[in-house]
Length: 341
Image (cartoon, rainbow, N blue to C red; front, side, top):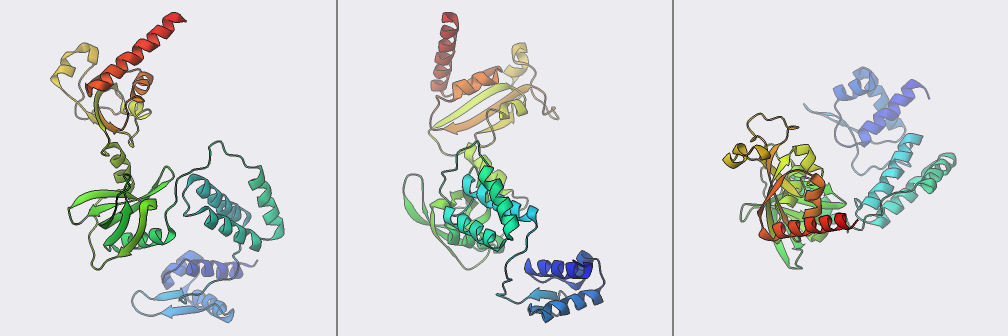
């Protein structure tokens, strides 16, 4: 393929990605001057590709609305990346439906050259996974698209939602972002009626509609961090508070951010007790051991004693008393079995 022809195809790919591309941007991406860009555009028009010129300060070129290209041309690496992405997304629960990913993969394989399709089939047929396929329900495609559009244009939403107790209702939402986590989709935002933070599972949203008006997203907001930290403070049955002497990294290996929150503690009792180590202070090395307050919420407590034992660090159970009793019983069982052995 000659270089000019390759550049014309690159120009087509740039225009196909959507929006208006300025002359300066196209010239820079193609490594040519503006006159050459215009010549390449003329070549596309001669091939019946409807390229439109957009005038004005931010003008340039774009493809006509609704235009669809004939079958795509993929390199071996690109085709493999697309098919593996569809397969991985379906197994991890990050596609809206299994059918959509399967039909999309089938369409792509139909338009690939026979040699490339056969090579890709050998990869897919020989591929094995160590993890079982995800069983999480995927979100409705129309709901996902509506919510995404509201996030982008900062438009209020009204959603029909079913909570974990099975209660259904209509709720307003200022959606800040969509987050995929552990095989599920979430939307995080604020309820404008009460001014409180909210995070919803997309697969529990039966319908979403855009309302009039707009809103401002808080500066510096990180939707992913917001969703993850929300798991650790969710309203579960037990509110657990611990003090653990260790490093942030070490504690996080057993109690990640989705499970627990950590903060430094500099109580006088910790500082005066040499067995508990020095109190944490400003500028403490994150890798240094010190006392950290750990808080989490849980429906059950029986999983915590083995986790605390696996950390192998000094700890204090501040609440609840029930957890303290479970830890003592777990330690007694371990000691009894060790003596028996």
